[in-house]
Length: 81
Image (cartoon, rainbow, N blue to C red; front, side):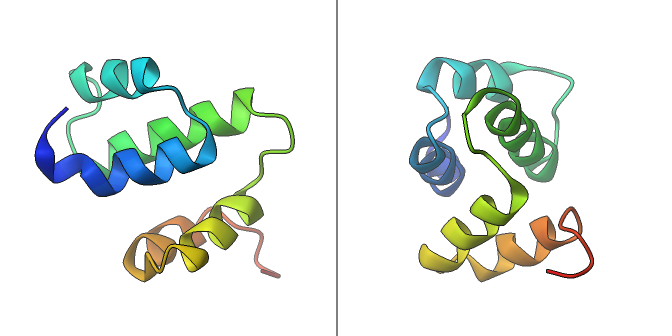
């Protein structure tokens, strides 16, 4: 993983995504942009971690003060959020 991916790694690690999965996502040619990598990691989280939800992601982003990322993720939240 590259040094400029530290914020992404931190968020995904905080949510419980294993480093081996993050390595696979970052190495995958099918995820070329930062947003694609972030969404792939978050989708893994949503599919594998018990209790995972977009609301939990939003709460963690708010807690970590990742407001820019929160705005990007907000499009995936229910409209009532």
